[in-house]
Length: 396
Ligand SMILES: NC(=O)c1ccc[n+]([C@@H]2O[C@H](COP(=O)([O-])OP(=O)(O)OC[C@H]3O[C@@H](n4cnc5c(N)ncnc54)[C@H](O)[C@@H]3O)[C@@H](O)[C@H]2O)c1
Ligand SMILES: [Zn+2]
Ligand SMILES: [Zn+2]
Image (cartoon, rainbow, N blue to C red; front, top):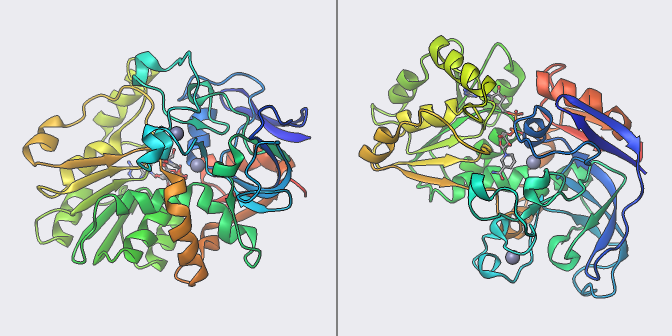
């Protein structure tokens, strides 16, 4: 089959690789019909998560048709021919964490010896196509995918919607939604969201779905005008990080208080706001003395109103410098974060699609054959050709 494989930092290619097989009795094999590229994939390709091996298949936002199930799969839950979305993380549904609906913290799907112990402490759940830090599972940017514990992880989908309305239930719609929902938003809240990428876009729409009074979105108007426009189309006020003082604008928009909820939808490859900060992180990351560039987190902590909540949806992998602990502590802020507990949100978010309260396909700018995935990665990374979200078609 064809699959997109990681070769080296900044190098991916589409190759013929062996088809996956049932290895464990609760596995299923999916024929992938749509599979997306995520900002998280960029962190792997750009070398920010140094646990990839040449030949690893990328991709964690797939959907498709079940081709084969192992003998112990509960057929009342998933069976051959079903149309399914596969959450990006693999969960068992039974452990301490899964019982508490903290599915991305599942204790049973990222097996020992765990190579991330010195970096993270305990292992989190396995993630499809997301390095050997999260189990080394083959990913879904491929024609076929093996899904472990399939009767828990395959999310059955209705027939009446096209793939592009459903496929984002695998990751970015629940991620944008959880980023707001777990902050307990109140009707008069202002929500500020850093990053107008796909995750930011779903966070903006989720904030409105959850009743926020005002949503402010921050990104770079010169680099990504189409993302800013998409944010405005949803009803957000935008701030251009390039040309405006983000802190001052946010305080102006909130009567001097600061936003109630501040969401980092940027992650570890953020661009800096001042020359000094940019140079600081560049030098330190180049010298491997810092693993990431936490500009958005720093600014969110500074801008958030006293007693407010900073929600970190952007991915971080290691050790960040110069986090303003003084602001966090003295302003009595709450931090909410985590890889998204996708399974927990799929039923209610599918319902929002059914009710027509959202059409998640709004975010798609490119549908391309899997064979063109390396080019797709380039335009997504460079934000060129108006690229916001790419859906790859393995059958094309
Ligand atoms: N928590 C989860 O489970 C989860 C799931 C999916 C993605 N993510 C993470 O969410 C983040 C965003 O993903 P995406 O697909 O939207 O990525 P993306 O790279 O397409 O979008 C990031 C956006 O942030 C903007 N940006 C950069 N620096 C900024 C700054 N300082 N201030 C404001 N905006 C800035 C960029 O211009 C870009 O538009 C990534 O870190 C990704 O790994 C987390
Ligand atoms: Zn993703
Ligand atoms: Zn579990």
